[in-house]
Length: 206
Image (cartoon, rainbow, N blue to C red; front, side, top):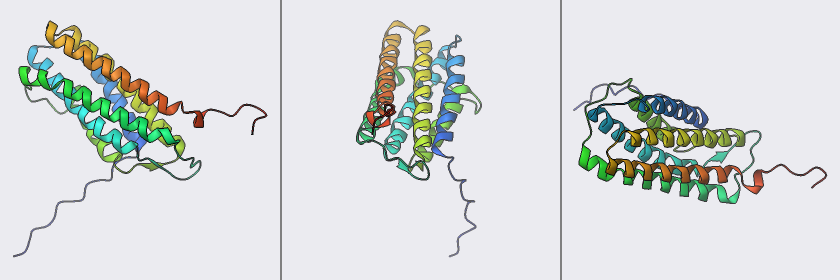
């Protein structure tokens, strides 16, 4: 028995920093969209999309913890980099789990259109999941990727606060808890970039 022609190969994922920038751009658009009042179905759908984004970014960030530096400069990541990225990934997944109860109570909402801000954000997170599976690049690219991820998480924090502002009280409490958890992710990622190994040497030092 012969098989039919195979599906065309998928295009390769973008470089890690490019994928991170796409996530931050999409998060900025979603934050702006979710600042406007939405109907209950749209609110449920936005929370479902946020849930999926946090899950995918959590898994993707685990991949960033294994970043391999190449080229020039090819400075290796300091010893605490991987652990801080792994901790950030865990916090993102915990934030995702906080939303489980909201989804169970509120449902998923209607099916989104492909160009809806939340759907675009989710697609950007899915692309990052592939791009960060085995990330390589210069140390500058590595740090740029983390910087863009920090920007994205900051914007997701704002977007979550927007959703909380127009939610019933119990749901708002849950969403504010997610926002607080995301603020911790930002702090953890920032610490990875502020490692003593990355600080400039004082003049005259060795």
